[in-house]
Length: 327
Image (cartoon, rainbow, N blue to C red; front, top):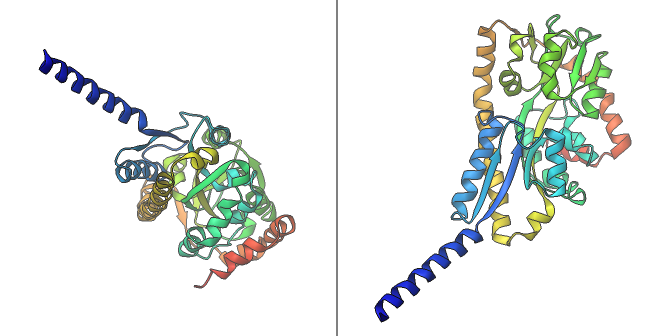
């Protein structure tokens, strides 16, 4: 009897310990509007895997793809409100909350990707993310979408005048709206989910996105021309509810920040490696690609967009980014 009692007691202790361990695990919900196959989606998966591994399973990130938890603006509001822990959205989508982030959308502000990475991974990137904190958001890392290029249904774009008069879809980015106004286009802010149909029906002539988004969205099926204008770089923010982040133990906070930084490097590398193949695949599908863009003419035509930003937000971040240009 005594032995049986001891065995039962031991079993109860083991069961209770297991239950306590299960309850101790912290699960964070991560929402995104991209697919798991997108390089951003793959970066999110990498992030979740690394968090679980480095926390010994005590901290788990569950990723919800394809707008399962809402569209871009819903993801931002959910993360701010705390109904969602983490989200991944383009930096232009949060520049309405923190206008300084719109500096990243200024045309031709980045010389190349290495310049962008020096800025985003350094003190300037940290300062930019810090502008979100009084809006209830903690910036974890910058992933990338990449340099934006223009597709359209009319003609190849070589010089600024080729953009004049085009009805071009733009995201909710003041800098991109001003960029296309400066080029003489007719920018039309529109949700991404509406874009394919708008181009298919002719309601929109053109759009601009980085290569991975053009490819994933299959825009090459309904657009005739892809011009490698590289007129703006699109960063992607991985953001977390600040109160939720602050409530976590310091070691969990460290894991999240380190894993997000490593996932950003992983995602960017993946993105860069895939871009050339994506362009080749799109060409095989029939879209005409031209890389003979007169970049100097585009820079000259859009130079006043920088002034529009600095008049509203000051020149601190512009100067910081310029200082990293030729390092």
